[in-house]
Length: 278
Image (cartoon, rainbow, N blue to C red; front, side, top):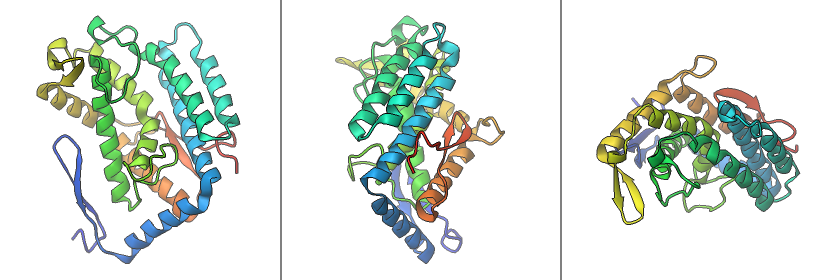
């Protein structure tokens, strides 16, 4: 039935890691992938930079909305405004990523402040698992990344053709791009998870200077992520379905020349003139 109805089968582990896929050999699916590659190539560096700009614009906007309740000093809005101005003015990737990185550093203490002492952290260190908070962030990021990889493959897009993340063909850079849109929501999900007792000191295994999630904590984190996917967004649509629609809209933008819409805290935002120059 899957072959007859052009439905891909994605195989993954219990932890959500991509393992393999069985794709229908239909002309429409092959043409979809070819159209994606042609569109990506035709954009050139300038066009791909514009899409990267739109992604960072959406992420900064989402951070300002998601973290607003934590901003007792009132500086978040000003910092976000300055970052968005720098994003608009950026003429190359280095300036674009620099603006995003500086803003991310101002947000990290906001989210981490107020957590129990064992979960306090000085900085985001991806992949190093230098403390319990970074270990949890890596865990939830991995779940989101793998979910997006599978969704992109199911839609017939090439997950290696990213815009913001540019390490071509080393990993699924397009999935990493889309993941940026959800980091603020997942930060707040993880913060609530810790404050409500979802993770305790004894749930981590420490080896040298790095931490690791215990098997039981990993199960609880997966369950929390799955609950979030089923949670309705502002319009009542489950986030799982919103993610599916995001990837469909991205395909229509790439392959059919439609306008680009991105998710910001569960709401659709059309990439504005300040994010896309053209």
